[in-house]
Figure 1 (tube, rainbow, N blue to C red):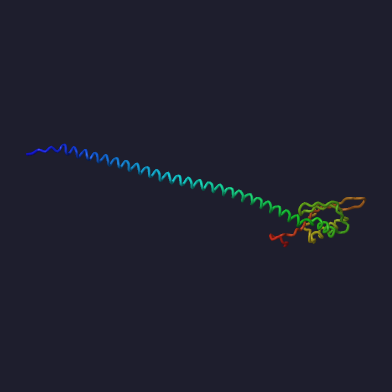
Figure 2 (cartoon, helix red, strand yellow):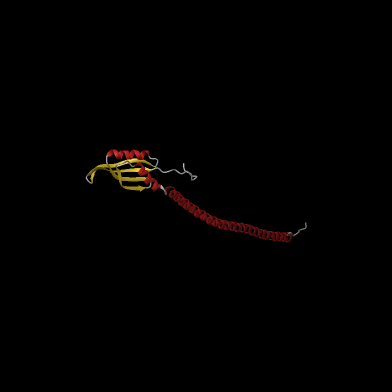
Length: 189
């Protein structure tokens, strides 16, 4: 029988397989490195893209915040102007009120009633004076109730006093002014 020594041939195949394995291992390593680099580059690109979007949004938010502040200031100015307008309208409406009040009081004042003082706070009027009798004070209160400009007479106090050797009734009463209501369109109702 012939004996063939296959050991060198097997050894060469092992070396060839080892070379092929190391070559493939190197190629897989290079490919894996390439894949890692590619994934890292893609992720880094997405991060930088998102950061640029975030920066743009921050810039736009800052611009919108400035606009919101301007709108708030405009609303405050509008409210201030509306308040001024209402004050001017109320002054315009009430400018003849004192004249109308005095005129109406002289019309409604019965004979024998004399005012010592009158004080107005808003629509409230405080009257102090003298009357020849309690009945004249009652007449004054009825006249005030029937008046188109005055309302709600309320007697606070009445007492008998002597003034210049005459017996009089000193009285204090409150009344209210009737104000015209103004609708939203600026017209009187």
